[in-house]
Figure 1 (spheres, rainbow, N blue to C red):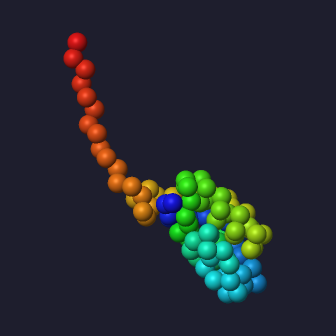
Figure 2 (cartoon, rainbow, N blue to C red; figure 1 turned 180 degrees about the vertical axis):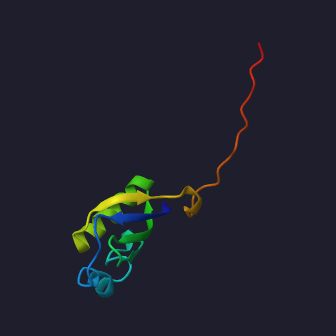
Length: 102
């Protein structure tokens, strides 16, 4: 299974009380399947930097989103994903286009 890197932009900032789940359970919020979820908050809108395993990017985003929502009550407003940062992705083979002769 691949591990995907992306950032969840939450619909609001988190309070110190809401981030206690990370203090209590660690970066995976108590479930290794969540991978690493690192909150960054203060300043109006919180972000969670994710390094999450999944069969697909959507699978990893859903897993992390549910874990964060369950722990904090905050919802995901936006997802930022840069394919250049995905880890353990298979190498991309570049195949030049072929020209068809008439």
